[in-house]
Image (cartoon, rainbow, N blue to C red; front, side):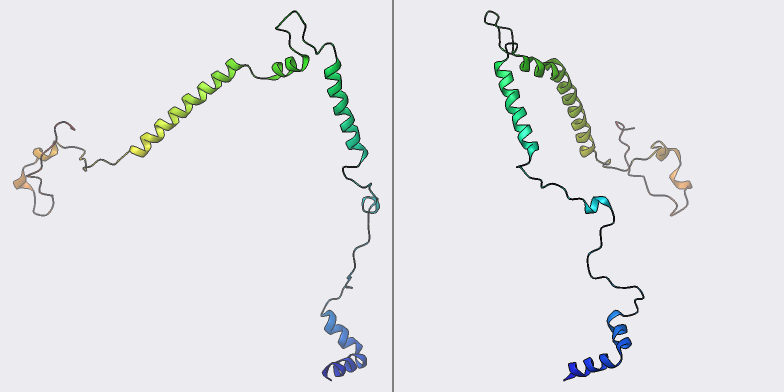
Length: 166
């Protein structure tokens, strides 16, 4: 009943109904997807997946490389000499860092780590002095006690100065 009254009012006053549904928007409301603007948006790209030709070429190149390495005579070790290595092994060894250089870098790193650990332990074990230290401990005996006004100085008559720390 209430819905039919609203519908009838919307038919009588279409401008009021449109104002209610759109609010105060002055621009046109678009409720669909936007139209393509550039060639990249309208272009159709081929389906991509593992069944594409690129993967076939990669597989073929891998198999051909493996077979070529096994078959080639330059890759085979010589029968008489024991120090001859296959080509791929020599290539990998030439690209690797030498063992002496790796040991030297490891030693430097170990020395640095030990130095850093020692400095960290020094900082962790640091403590404030157990007693307050005076700058001039000889000043205790310098001034006579009877010439000091009452309340202006702390009584140091029973204070003993540690001779080892002076």
